[in-house]
Image (spheres, rainbow over the protein chains, first blue to last red):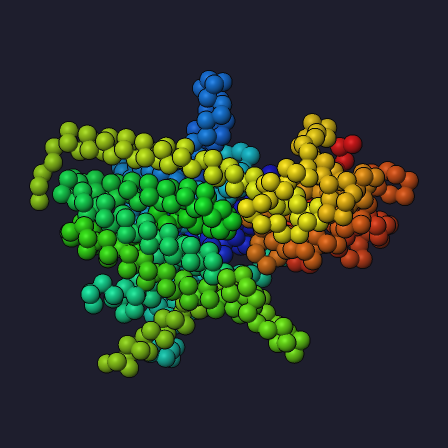
Length: 203
Length: 199
Length: 200
């Protein structure tokens, strides 16, 4: 249990998707004009991460890794398919996002109203694929670990985009040199936020 | 010709269209991985554009995104495997970021916007140039981060030791991730100032 | 825009998947020998560095390694006997452990008394740049040289990686200073050495 919370806290603060690995920057910069939509996208990212990373974990463990096919027959034990992981992960993510969109639309129109427009954006969000690839690299022992990692990364991303959107709302009232407006200042603010987050390194 | 050179300066995909920064910046702490990353993106972008353009008339529109994804991820895996075989030490530094080329918005963006509606040769050049424009930013950022952060370029020390004796210190902050963003912000600033002056 | 039948779409995607799968498998099988050779070379370079040969060129590392080292076993684990750069004989022990973020590993070269460290190298997969990744630097690894993994009475104590001034009951010859700012990676190295060197 302790390990799980450790992974969670680490991936929220220290290994933050945005500030430490620059993942999901495209949508991060595009959808952070106001706090409300930023929050919606953040929740959607959490949601998709929480589903896709554990699924990819299972795929990796029982299909791709060296020796993973041993459960089929002993002769398959030294088949190593990990070079296919990229293509499978991206296919799984695209598929699950599609599926989620349809399921949510059927089951909860309210939720669909809130998340629906963000879901297609997410399939090409590098934070999602990135989390799966990092998960593979970290060799977690169980699905629970990968789930906790996924949630942590999602919450970290949510935190980053909401903080950034809040600052951006305030920014409208500041006097920024004209060439630096919009994109330029957005990068610099993200950088400064990142430096702030580095303070968590000691935890 | 003008049309193709655009991505290198005034239509630079990172600086102007804010595309593809995701996977870009994490590999810019040193020049070498940044250059290898640039070459990989150029290859993937150009070849993907070429392939999609060649088969553009056979792709059913309903599944075009999936076809694009399939082509791009196949290319990325090939590039990844080649890197592991040829430049093993750099491929370790790039780790998952080679894989993340798949979700690089520049590539998918160019496929949608250009390759689906143009002939193979122009598509190939367009891909190459967009990859190069993207790489240009990476290399500039990596140049400053390595020079100021580690005092080396391409792993060779370039700052004379007399400087260190006189009290010069490498700026450790430069190696940390946030500085990459601040440097890109500055590049955008310079780019926009040029544009405004030109008007 | 042209219309495509469902059957066409289905065939199209199947064909595409088959083509890419064949291509990828071909590339993978074609490049595998070189990838494995690269891993061997890296290992040879690391062990040679730990044995005091300095940085050996990639092209000659594998050859050099096989001329000075012979494979042995130590409690069923991978180990080598190596002719060190200074002419003495040493034992190379592979150590594996966990850092802050992912696996860390390394090679320890013991002198022929099986207790004194002659050299050490570490590698890591994903430690924090600028902090945890300092374990690979000479500044850290050279502090191990000459340290002993047993105390005065010959009992195993490993070489502890500890913060300066803490746990002063451990003798100077059995400890090195941890990297400041990288507490968890240092603890990982500490645990790795304790676990892997203790298998007499």
